[in-house]
Image (cartoon, rainbow, N blue to C red; front, side):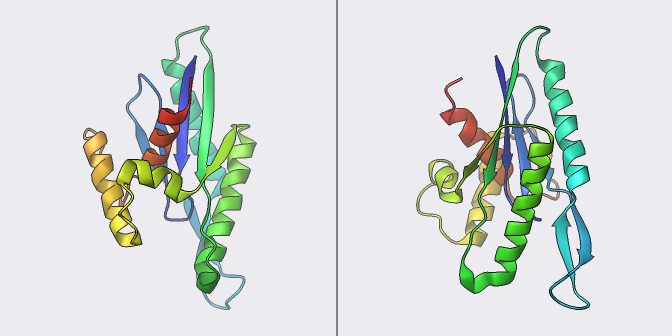
Length: 175
């Protein structure tokens, strides 16, 4: 059996990482679309572009199926990072929760099985326990990603969170 691991760093600035044996890891920006903010007149917000995200998932699924030998099974596991919910950061929390719901809808549209993961669960084993400041975490994530997957094109990417989530899932899954 072949397993496709999809790690999703939640949010409109997040990434989607894909790991599967016999495939070069893939890393994508989460697709977004600008929309009017329904809470603040004249302001814009970024939202997950669900139809584009579903198409991305279809493309990933198709690419994985192409490298699986005929007659062999493909198992898919999506790990979606839970949004943070600190009350004093209401706009960021609202954005994270909107993105979380939209991403779940896209994953469920594809009928992919999924689990949730808190950031500390995957960050500690891959980045270390001493890194706690958000800006430092992003830099550490990008550095770790470049170290682990030096052949990837890292142009325009600010972190490797999606790939690191997928890698964490791959190393903890018994199949």
